[in-house]
Image (cartoon, rainbow over all chains, first blue to last red; front, side):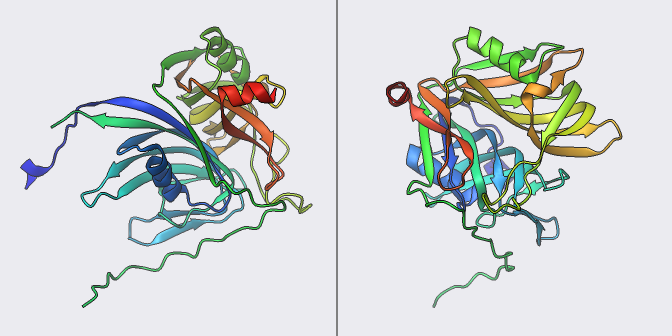
Length: 132
Length: 188
């Protein structure tokens, strides 16, 4: 039912976390792990740059698109982490990458399929929803 | 009975082997209790490096994460990172590629410190070249300049965190890493 979909959530920003993620860790899962480590229930990505071995995006047809590296440069990310009904954390991350010739590609990153090449720097800002 | 979910197979991720010893900590992280936010207008005619570092230094910000918004650059140099033929590293930056003037679409940047303690900016961005091609990569911030209008930047300070570039043994690359302020001052 539409009435059950909460379209507006009031809240405030809390702590700010910065991480350096090492090679072969996954881009999406490392953002979730950073939230677990910092105790963030919800967070927004505030900045990110680094490189991937290969980039793997979800395609509109439900398949995947692979951008071959190494290294594929992470140019910019948008995304958030939300605590799920079962208590798990889920990051939804979209972004733009540049391949080894500087050509750009974008889309939603597939969790588990985007290993870091040399480094991944990410800044998350904790989101504190007001009590409903 | 176990319930199975049918899912399309993913491309198998590749695990690369870097030349140095593998560091035991895979996610190095620090937090600030509250981020201070600043909106900067990058000064026309200045390099991206100077236009970012000078106002943040005046504000007392030593470490920050930034989003660069759109704007014009009078000159832009960037690098991409193909495989390193020497084998010394898995991938390495190319020599800077000059585009001449360009339109910045957006980008992200980190303010930290060099190994010698000087302020440094690490920036990746997407831009449109004068021939219309859209490109992206690692921006050479000390050789790329703001054109005639200020470029807006949202900066989030990372108070209490020292971001410092150190030589990474695993990848053989100089990398930005977070330290506690006390730890960093002891190391100097």
